[in-house]
Length: 245
Ligand code: F6R
Picture 1 (cartoon, rainbow, N blue to C red):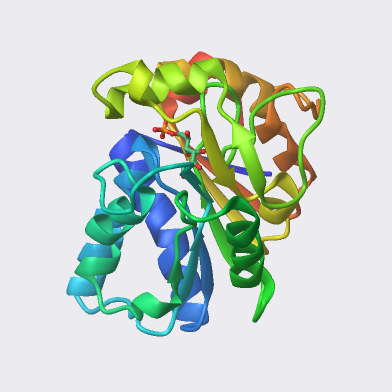
Picture 2: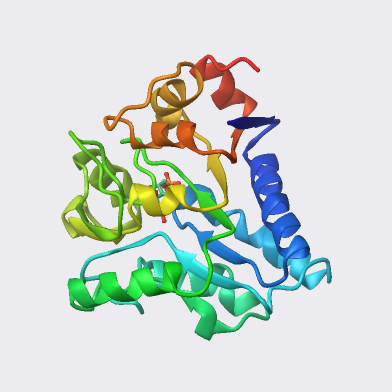
């Protein structure tokens, strides 16, 4: 696992975006796995800026997003489709037909089938962008006795409901379930770039960066088994987690 320690979160966003831009320049038809959430959000303006400056062309890429809340209307501000449209897809030249955000409104079995087609029908994901939850989740793969390899419906951990309640009027409004790529789906991406910041992620970063354990209790630790993972963190988080290069 490669760890890049930056001066601050802004620099982390630039660094993660640079990895994506490098990938798209190498292969303009790249398939990108994309993430939402507060940490990943600020990676997109850097991509949009690079596009506007003519430094990168997204018109040939295809994308698949990690997850969505069950029951979430795609036009609602909390919908991950809505986030992706406003943060990225509507601001660059991209073929929207080749962007996929799972629907939380469809029949689960139908959506799982479609999600798998989008993930695997043509090519594998070249680069997967990830954040990580306070629970240690990646995508919405929450800690437990075991993890699920493929696309599935997942109940959200109490800590995730609490953390994500900042995007809703009240914790009661946070959906309890999500549709998500499984751990195996994430691990099949050729390259993974994870961006992490914030004091509440210290325990997870300790588990990920300061020991060699792999445990379902902290799903992000599965990344230790992947060949090409880059974790981008700021020096404040690195110090608090006790990470030393
Ligand atoms: C979002 C996703 C989640 C988030 C995670 C961190 O698509 O899959 O795993 O990356 O919940 O969210 P923030 O950055 O808001 O703490």
